Length: 424
Image (cartoon, rainbow, N blue to C red; front, side, top):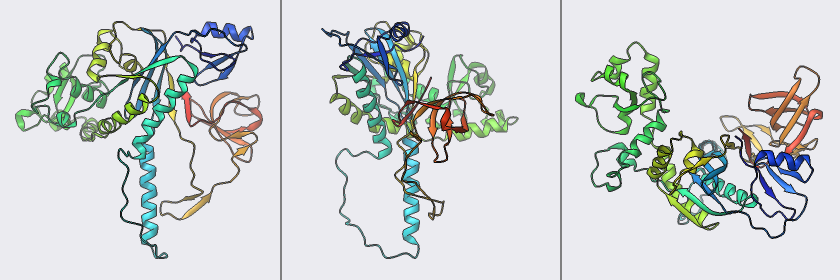
């Protein structure tokens, strides 16, 4: 089942989303036209009087790398998406720029006057890699409000207790002493180890929290010493050291040791941005919140699988939930390109310069196009983001990979560049 289709009238007022079959009927009878491909939106060729659309609710499951989005009509999920952030990519770019600047200033170059030292950041300042997550979610909430009659926002205001995750025996944490006790550390381990046994890769089976270094031999309860294991592997390992248990599988042993030392960056990113995101959304529409344990309780009670958009649909107080869609839109942040006019090598020396002309043969890098190649070695139909060159030979990034050397003569524009790539 696909997402419902958003509909706006001739005055661009949002109407009730409609099923895909109804959308095809409107297009066939030429009563509507395609207004936007992602998210797929139709615009009617007439004005609708006495607008009274059903109010919708948008629910969010904010995460460090992915944010789940679900649009609900009462208890029915009619549209869903998973938004992939690029916060870590921004962080890497900033660190690369900083290292290049420092290396230039340390070489025998002209003297650079020192800046004013008494600089301070405003209250509530967040690094660009974290603020990016807030602004991206805000962009998509505002965008969906233009195409559908959304009146309320519900978000998961989760707080990862990193001290509790490192040492589960910390006292005085009352919120883990009820029916949902233990959900936080276990959820983190499920996410970290891919919801499968670390020793045999068994999936869709009851998993137990297991100590990599046994407690009987000095192991601790820190999260870096915990993993997930099926019952058979847990019993077979017993109190053996992991080096002894996996001595015949050195590749798996090295992977477990490497992944066990992963830092808590994702949890810290969610903690740092949660209140800023809440304040930003509250300025758009009335916003309610729910806890992470409540989200998992609702999803488990409804017998739903673990996905970002399903977690978003289960945020807050719900009795029942119906999934009218099973195909969420995959949205990936790609950015608008770079403002850097001169590219450098790893030592900071210039190697290339950006052209001033951005549009070639009516296309711009980042546009979504459809190419129907009728002759040559690359006969076929391709849909994806385009990389333009002044020679007219384009590259297209599709779901299957990158296709190089497609002539502009075979290309038809679908949607202009907006800083995202899309897929299903």
